[in-house]
Structures are given as C-alpha cells and as structure tokens.
Length: 84
Figure 1 (cartoon, rainbow, N blue to C red):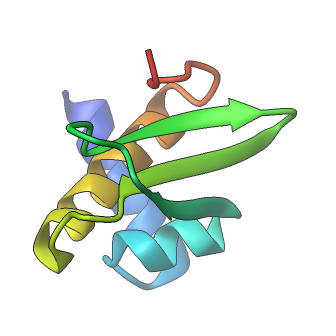
Figure 2: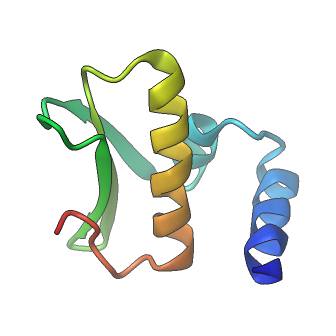
C-alpha cells in the first residue's frame, strides 16, 4: 500500500496539483461524461489512448471521487480495462 501513496505523492509533486481532473489532463487521459445507468464510472484504454468515463448524472462531488478512483486504475494498472 505504501507504493500507492508514494506514486500519488510523485504525481502531485510532478504536476503541482491534487485535482484529479488536472492530473488526468496533464497525463493525457481523456475524461468523458456519458449516461452509464447505475454505473458511476470506469477506466478504459483503446489503441494506447486512455479514457476515464464518468456518469453524467453524478454530482460534482461524486465526479471528483470517481475521477480520482479511475485515475488510480489508469496509473496503477494502465493496461487493464475496468469496464467489465
């Protein structure tokens, strides 16, 4: 678990922000808002392009949490799609 905290610290120091949306943008990860039904969000990678999908009905606070959570997938297991 310490490696996760270390990775987070590295990203914050490198990009000078704690905002998951700004971190995603800095890391060239596309954030998409779309209707997902009961699914809050997921991470996917297609043809070396990374995406964070967020349910468009989520509140602003939920979107922040979802983006941070999916950013974790993008950083820690970038080749594993979480859509399934």
